[in-house]
Length: 429
Image (cartoon, rainbow, N blue to C red; front, side, top):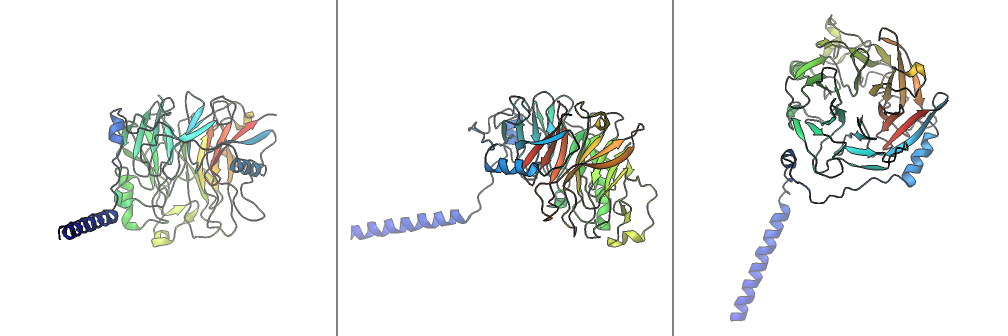
């Protein structure tokens, strides 16, 4: 009888344990605590100090090199694979070392290092992996060597990142806490890639794409107040003195200051669904705060029809683009050429990357453009500099340039999030 009772008890206990296990399995796994609070206090957040590196050799690298043979450049120029960098987007060349940091639209910021200074990266690994980045597309440097990372809805600042990137834990300064760059209810999977630059005034400038193809009228007041569909600026270390610098922009994914006159140049992506050839692409030039660039009443030279914006009188205070590009080529990152290695006609010129169209019956883009400037700082002419990532025979992409950056030796880097690579363009007459 005792044995039977003991067996029943054991069976009941087993069933209870099984039920508890099933219940636990059905509960959602709690999210891990944010490590940022530890890192702010220079405390250890990760015990494993090893960070996996991205393979730089093998079949994938060989295939990327083979595709580069299709790329056409002006005489004397050469393009080579600099690094295999998955999902490579916007780049920030380090001020003191032979390395750069690369943002993505996923969850990783890459640290890319050329340790032996031979013009080819030796190591690619994730930066600050103990943090949970969300769409950390924008990367840029302060004048004194702090790396700013702009996510979809947060801004972080990393002191001396190029010297303290080796381990998973790094010092961090929250500039804008998560959920405070834009109202959380305005977060969207669409147009959430931010870009950033430090201006001549030392302030941090950030592009904020608006999340719709065309914004509804009831959104405009909020967006103008917050800076969505425009550019905001703020203190790069604590987010103070925030103000809306420019409005009337649909979705800029690239900005750069001209070092000669301090003007701010930025791209803007076109409204979809209006046809192959409209609206024209834009490169804009801002010379002071408060300028309005026309959206959503006009983009390029085209009136926007959705929500009846074309029925309104055209606002009188529009600042026109300084360069009109091919429609839907998706102009993204840009950089003024500050090096001395390229021929004289390129020095001071503006290089820009075209990501390539997705909603055009005949694809266009996937190339690097160059815009020459006149003595007064305004554009002269624009032409194709590097082309060939779009296969003209099949209409398929073998690469999609995102950003351009000038290295200290005067070479030009081009990022490609489709092939997952960074290319290096050099000149040898």
